[in-house]
Image (cartoon, rainbow, N blue to C red; front, side, top):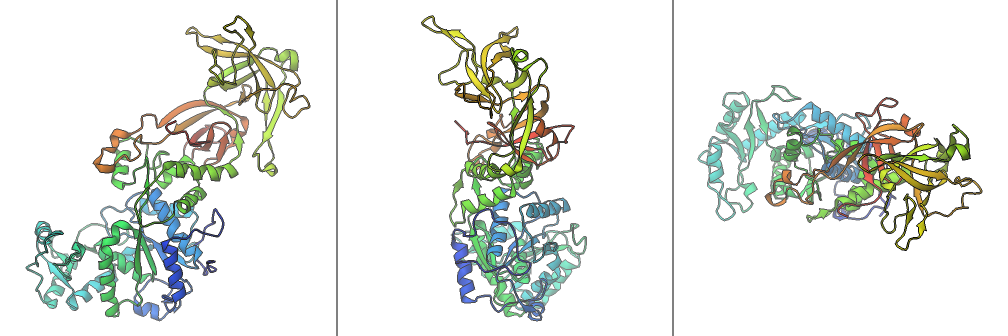
Length: 615
């Protein structure tokens, strides 16, 4: 089916591929709901609110409402990127709106630093939220007043009570999968007693941890999550948004469905670990809809499999350990799976959108090969990244007959397309002189079979003289290797060759000498030195923390190598975050933090030209 036109202010992003999206179970659910008119009668009060607020509003122009509700207690990672693309993408494709909401109900772990980083990540991925490009994100903490009102309602209707057992007593009385729970001795309190006790909690008359508010459902229920779960606790902590207004805070399982309902979410999409919580989600909303606090129909929760990516960990705790133990340079270390790390590595928003679309959505756990992510980056950069030549392990090549052939002190103008498939981008220009930098690996004194680069003249096993190899200096001339100067350790320090006249690329004589090898180079006269950071996978184990393994033990000692390279002059003006294909080597990005145009050149390896891991 063709998705309907988006509503005004709908979630927007530029799709990477065609408009025809592969189907999945979530799309099928949404299409069924649209066809059945499940949410067609909803009204929207212009902002989140209770049943009365929305009843006074206008018919909701958004055909669906989804949400991305991160807790601002850390930096987002590749798994969150999948969720962002999923929720915002569905809203975009079906004429809906996606909400960005901070699930900030845990004041001890949240910080405005994380709030700002999340806003930046969603914007960078290409999405707007809450119905307008500049709309502020929603915050669960803005709903604390309603949540407290809902808690009092549950008490008044006999569906909640204040429990003064210790945490250990509650744990023991909860039972297990084979044994029903035991009623709390405080469960039989009257609504009036419970209401008084809750108000004492709210007013700060009791110590942290001394009591909690619990839903009253069924202590013998086979789903342990429905055995009177805690919904409010006492916690004296300054909140980044509400300050010290509250000393009691709602539990996530209580707050989350209320947040969805106040925002008129239609399809609440989360990962599979929340599947067992769905019955409580439905129970709570049913109680509040029945009491008239929330409007019907309520949101519905749907679960999908979280992203499991090989050679990656996504636990916030473990990622924090890598940062605080200085195993990486920070949250934005290019080896980290955080969005800020991926961005600094050279990943584009388009590549992450393509990755999210390509891996799809399922209800069963599986592992995605890291090479799939890298392939999406190659695919997007191949079409967009300007080309350049860089020598990562330079050794000097001297053209001994340059002055004789070209003239003393002459510099020969050479050019190449900025992008081979985009002639409209023009040409880049560089000069060749009698000395150029080449890759050290392009010279072998005793070449292996199939080596088509530089090697010197030699005598074969039959005593016959073998000429030195001929190669083309890319976009330049054909040369013939004549030998090398060695250092005290007998290692080549300078490669020697002679220029073959009238063989320059683009001239009538360019085909006069046939060669099998073409090598990249940078002229010594105008080379720009650059720090190049060669990043690899952070772990050597494809599942570094599976099965209780110590992920630190599988850290890759070769995940970063820093070299001083020589790069062509067109890179001197590269801007931070600008991507290039270094011909023959891979895709690189000018570092967002350390690269300073015209002063300090720093490039990060984003991805090689092909997958060579383990080969």
